[in-house]
Amino acid sequence: MRADARKNRDHLLAVTGTAITEQGVDVSLRDIARRAGVGLATLLRHFPTREALLDALLHTSFDELTAKADALETSSSPDEALVAWLRDCVAWTTEYRGVVVLMAAAIEDPESALHASCATVRASGARLLTRAQAAGMARTDIDGADLFALVMALAWLGDQRSLAPRADHLFEVVASAVLTSPASSDAEGEHRPGARS
Image (tube, rainbow, N blue to C red):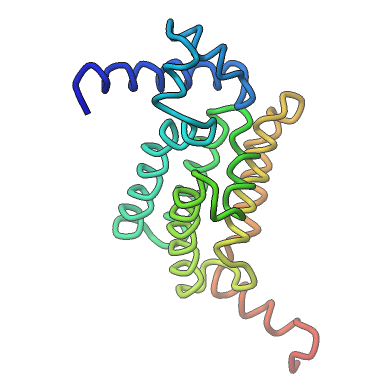
């Protein structure tokens, strides 16, 4: 890509990020083009669909979340790594208003431009969850898809102005429900229906 084309593309992405932060993912492409000082045709030449534009905008952040999971896997205890990644993922997802709805749809649609990126993020969280489960630090009745759904739910809360003040508290509630300790896991096993007393 030529340097001027790269500069124009980066400018469009920067303007898109600001527009989505302010107005949400349903901001019109025409409005984004107007803000960027270009025609709609120019925007569509770079990004033929809304999803292509969003994928380009979000791709770097998806890569950062995946890299963060890799780093946490080697630098933190399993429980701390899982909660830190979960917190970062929720915080990032609420940065762009309404993106959580698109991510929830994209993860189920292999044809979506966002599908591969969402699947990669989900897989990185699943790895951290599996590691915590193997260490007896996370409940074993959830998987990566459940964890991704919890991220979506927590991000949705952050998107709701009336509920946003509760978001941090509810994050702690969810995180503590996901995590467990070896002692509490043993106790749960003893009290499960059908367990020997």
